[in-house]
Length: 161
Image 1 (cartoon, rainbow, N blue to C red):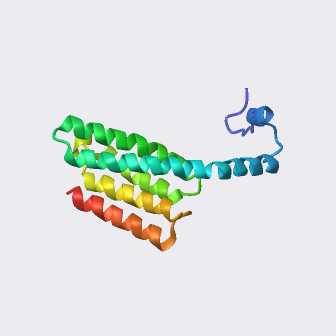
Image 2: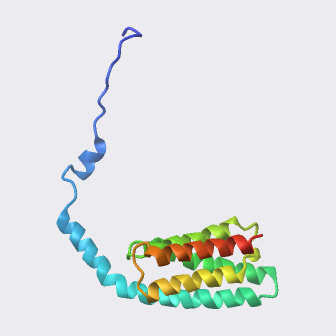
Image 3: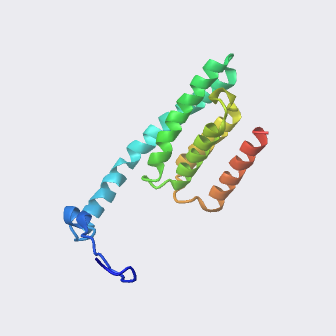
């Protein structure tokens, strides 16, 4: 047995390195992946345009819905669309769209019930996402991006009271 005051260092084997290899990043594979993503960007933008059209229609349905069940159905459909959109946006160079999509998801998540969503919040997030795609606002959007975030945050705060 060892003395209680004795320090022993145990070096565990790196099993992950053994499984994936220790060669680091393959720049050729990285370049090929970036080219593949670039080739899919046009398809992505077309899909997003269709998703935004559906979100816009659902915001109209939400505003016109006569009962809680119909309102909830519209909100849940919007959530499904924007949840997927926010996940893909960063991959295609639109982290601002990802952030705005995340803001809408957090708004819906914070509601006690989906039917409580305000159609204006959905519509403004949709309009912001459409502007980002239409004007090809990549990266964080700079000052324009910060203004969008600030305005959407203020809108949600104002309408959530």
